[in-house]
Structures are given as structure tokens and as C-alpha cells.
Image 1 (tube, helix red, strand yellow):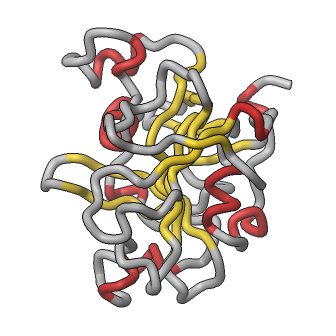
Image 2 (image 1 turned 45 degrees about the vertical axis):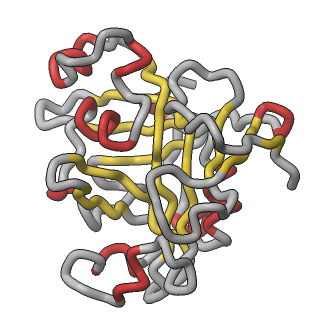
Length: 210
């Protein structure tokens, strides 16, 4: 089956524990439809779970605001926000409407021609540098705030079913770039994949255990 004809993961896939969703998103395919109608695809290789208002690192701690409106649901929607005033980040909203939990897509492995990605990531020296971070992948695939709140089943950003990643190939570490709940092991990655973002030197990386 071609990537284009794979079915999008249903909203029920996301209406579960964000940590489980984050782990099971590994290996799934990100498909982004551009203004010209073409679709660019990638394999998800790194994610982070943000659990909701009881997670100090989650935006839901601030409550339901204009910025976090789409973080609060319903499940299976895109939550896109800007960090450092310059980089967009893409999240898949999880759990029931009103909770405010999500999974951050941290890195993807491009599938197909990378030339369109290079046009948007001129600073990338190697192919692996095109999408090995949440801001990088959004820049490469032209994901912006305009896509915030769109359906991951029928919108311009879709996450489509593909072969998953066996437990033996999954590693877990603390989340990157946060100061609160910084030790929570909620980052999931495909072991040995060159498109995974760099792990801080002192981080413990452990095998995944269901």
C-alpha cells in the first residue's frame, strides 16, 4: 500500500494515556499536504508525552487560554505553538475534550525526495539535520499556527497507519528542554535512528518496558 493511500489513525487512537500514544506513534507516518496539493511524508521516530494539568511541564497547567485552546481537545487534533518566538512545534492532542494533554512530535525520518525540505531548511548540512528536532521538522514541512486545531484525520496534517516499532527497538529518556518535571521518562525514540535529535550527555536512556 502506498503512503498516500494509508488510512489516518482514528480519533480513538489518541483518546488514551498520552505516554502510550507517544510510544505507539513511533513508526507511524506523518503526511503533510501542501498548498499545491502535493503531499510530503515522513516516519515518526521520536516523541514526548505531556500528560495534562497535573504535569508541570504541560501547557495545560496555565488553563484554557487562547494559545492553548486546541490543546484541550478533542483528541486527534493538531496543537501547534511557537517556542522562543521563532520555532513552531507540532503536537497530537490526546485524551478527552477539556483535559489538555498531547504528544509532541520531536523528530521524523523523511520518506521520498528531500529536495522540498532542503528548500526550507537551507542551514541543514546533512539530511539527518533536516528534521531531527521539533522546530526543524515543522520548518521543513511548513507546519505553522494556521494548522492549529485541524483534524489529524482529514486536515492538512495527518498521521497515518504504518508498521509500528518493536518494543526492543524503543528507548526512553527524560524530556528535553524543560525545567519542570525534567526527570520524568516520557521521551520515546527509535534506537539507532540517525534522525533522532541529540540526547543530552547526562540523560539516562533506557530500554522501553511495556
